[in-house]
Image 1 (cartoon, rainbow, N blue to C red):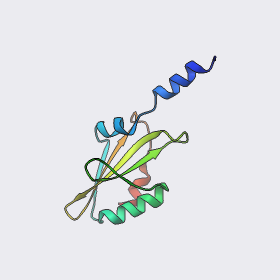
Image 2: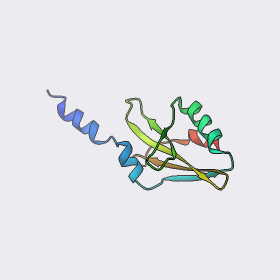
Image 3: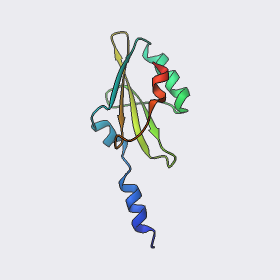
Image 4: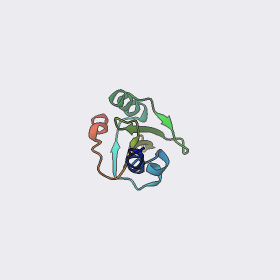
Length: 102
C-alpha cells in the first residue's frame, strides 16, 4: 500500500498515443525514398510493425522499457518521397534511430 502513490506518480508521466498525435511535431524531415522503403527500414530498426493512423498514414510507436509510448513516427507521402514527423513525449526522449532510414 505504501507504493501506491509512487505508482500513480509513474503513470502520470506516461503519454498515450492519442496525446502524442495531438501534440506538435518535434522533428520533421523529408526523404526522397518511397514510403514503402522507409517503412521497411523503420520496421527493422524498431522491431515493430507499423500501424495506420486515422488519416491513412503509416505510423510507428516507440516505447520505453515499460512498454509505454514515448514517441510516434508518422510517414506521409510527399512529392514522390516521404515526409517523416516525430512527436516525442515530454521532449526529453532521444529518438534518433529513425534518421538512419532517410
